[in-house]
Amino acid sequence: MRAAVLHETGQEKLEVLDDVEAVGFGPGKVRLRIRATGLCHSDLSAMSGVLPQPAPFVPGHEGAGEVLDVGDGVTGLSAGDRVLVCWLPACGVCPSCRRGQTHLCLAGFMNAGTPNFKRPGGDVFGFAGTGTFAEEVVVDAACAVPVPDDVPFEIAALIGCGVTTGLGAAINTAQVEAGSSVAVIGCGGVGISAIQGARARGAAQIVAVDPVASRREAALRFGATEAVAPGELDDAKQRITGGEGFDYVFEVVGRSATARTAYDTTRRGGTLCVVGAGAMDDHLQLNMFELFFDEKRILPSMFGGGDVLRSYERAVALWRAGRIDLESMITHRVRLDGVNDALDQMRTGESLRTCIEL
Ligand SMILES: [Zn+2]
Ligand SMILES: [Zn+2]
View 1: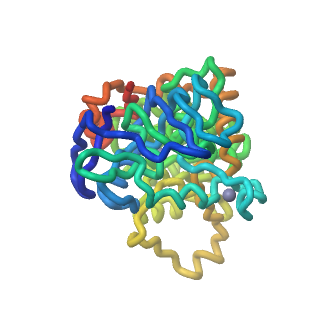
View 2 (view 1 turned 135 degrees about the horizontal axis):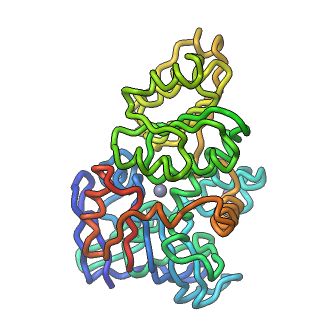
């Protein structure tokens, strides 16, 4: 079957090959036919080495498709079911899961060192234990989450990562208050989802911050009340908050420089919510005086910051009710052969989400 493979970490292009086989099927596993996958910024970060990931590997972790086969002992799933791929499956029994913080379960990472694919050249890993830039993939049953039949594959795929991450940051982690002021730094798919989450919570002002003009224009369509380039953020802070700073600032880039800007843009006693996935050697510096004196709450948000299945259900409910717009987030579509175009569209900021149809 066909899959897009990154041969070595640091390479910029994927090779679409037709000699790849999904491996590992057996008890507790399911075999999926992937139908749609989004390209998430984390895929680029894994390709460049910012996020740890053994190579060669098939990127993609934001996917949806159909169940082809279920292994022994799998309950609640059968062939033909429509599912989204959850790259962070919950084991249900560890201390994090028992607290309801299934987004902090580490069980899924235990499989990260096990190849999901093979080809004549040898083993091939799947990014984050999944690898959805492939027609088929074998995953743990907990990674295949059933979705209702009225949810198209492309929408289900987005809910599998970017939408859940951004919505959850606003709803679960920051718990944006009605009437508050919000700034969102970084307006790709996750940032747009944070904007939609802040709007759903009733924020009064939502300022979108992004260097790319097309993303600023898009942010206004998804609920931002104003959109500015990074150099104009200070001015917006003065105008909108009287210089005090925003009640909530979302950092959706994953760099210490933007996190520092976000900290400085948050009002005293306000909330800085860190959503971007950054590098292990990129350090955020705060001095001990400002840390205690300004009492800004620094709240990291990992994959939506709450129970993962609940977050999926909520995204579906908000989408069905027309309170969030997921269709318009898909600005580009390609087939698997166009995967390198999708990478370029993401790098330049031209796309919010490119959907790869398989
Ligand atoms: Zn667990
Ligand atoms: Zn992702």
